[in-house]
Image (cartoon, rainbow, N blue to C red; front, side, top):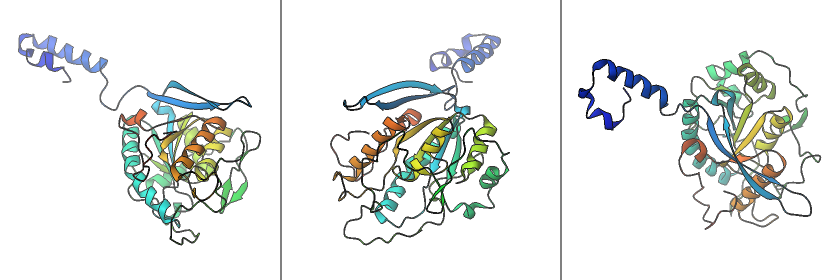
Length: 310
């Protein structure tokens, strides 16, 4: 019986029937841990009216967990850029904690490790995505290609060019030669696949899963924000086009950015700039603290005294 300590010490003073009634009322009024009725998020967005700079605003919202999905983008077991791979390894532990807490509250988790879903062909998570009934999309899915998959490119009707130059593919390794290749074979093992999760990198399959469950709210996390988290067929641009209410978990993401390229800032400030771009042109963001109650994640190499966008 979930009865406060104030009453437990004097419980023998009350008739048994009253004790049972009190227990029933307390359990009805006070929700069990992890079973809150809504997700309370502080969504940060930016607006701009040229020539004025973007202005930041934060709005508190409440989302129904049963109508919310988290899509984990491209958290692979390895990467051709070793600094990127190292950061994914560091990010995975806090992300796994976040996913556990989100599941416990009723949020649907979709793992989306692009190009390696074959590794999971015999898992119930992959079979769940394949078995979801077909649902027509309100607008056509992206058909352009990049890296062997459909892709949502930069949209000049909605956004300017990205604020960082990633034309060199963005590897931030210093004094180490990294060759572009597909180094990944699966999602990083740190991220657990729960029985109720799904796994897909296909835009139509993921739409089917969302439609089957009546999910209106989609949260994106993972890597890399300036590339896959924006452009994949299940990611931010596509979900916005499809009419979902989308949010980025800004502390559980990273970018492919080389500080030697424009605008010449450190790697983590480069990530902040892309977060601000997303907030202005695509969707709001929030930190994992809103779901976990823990301090937001910060990379060990991020030694800035006052991280701007975080």
